[in-house]
Amino acid sequence: MRAKRWLVHGLWLALTFLVTTYFGGWHYVGFLADFGQPPPALSQTDPSFWAGGLWFSLTVIAILGAHEAGHYLACRRYGVDASLPVFLPAPLPLTGTFGAFIRIRDVIPHKQALFDIGAIGPFAGFVVAVPLLVLGLWLSRLVPMPEHLEMISLGRPLVFRGLQAMLWGPLPDGQLLHLHPVARAAWFGLLATALNLFPLAQLDGGHVAYAVFGARARWITIGTAATVLALTFVSGSWVAWAVLVAIVLGVAGISHPPTANDALPLGRRRTVLAVVAAAVFVLCFTPAPVEPIDRLARSPFATPGTPVTTSRPAR
Image 1: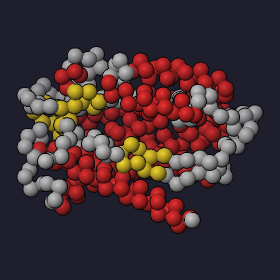
Image 2: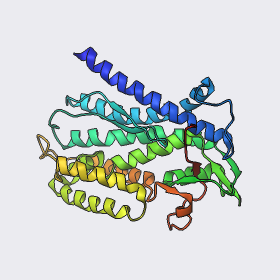
Image 3: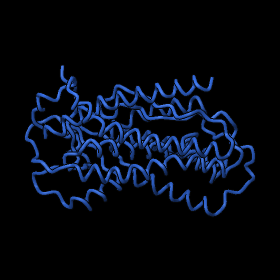
């Protein structure tokens, strides 16, 4: 039975790796093309296409893997029964994956364990994502702004803006920063970290909120759900997240389940780390994650300098 579980989880990981490498290959082709015609030799039948896709896929797998490994190892530390990480491939050109998760089968013993299990995943993912973002930005390059091209823009979280400013400074007029696939993958890692840190029910942020505030965290969940709904009016890219949040709250409920011993105090050190978790959320959050360039130009949340071509496989 144990060998079968490892095989199933390994297959999901392999499939996610294959899909993210495929879409990563198109990111790589787009990067080499510099918003022009892609090199004819780099088609999906060329080994260089798949080799180029590894820039993206290995970055995504590293960030998601660190996140879920953090959760899993924390569960093992406290003797909590949990599944191995499950990676989810997806036919999404921008990411190639829905992310990853572990399934916790036991009641969490106390709030300290709940906090550690909830917070360590985003912390680990963030620690891996930041140096990879530095690498990706360093590999990116300035190119002239094309006159006519369908593009989308990736909203820049604060940590992205800060690192880009350190590495590139103010962008010259008429130039844009063409993101390397590693930077795009790291951007997704930051977005995944922010989504998980939303203080909602049984998301990572919900675990942290319950560990800190106890039963009062249900009001934080309600307020956060309302905020997610409001974000859909800021950017249409939040609609899918709002639907998912509604499904999760409908199935799991608004209130976080209690631990086996809610009376055990969280302690000062973990309370400080809860503030750090909130800071990580702020650093990774962006109000308009994905926007078409024409709409972005009219938005108060415009983030010039990070447009990417819409990845579309050749037909």
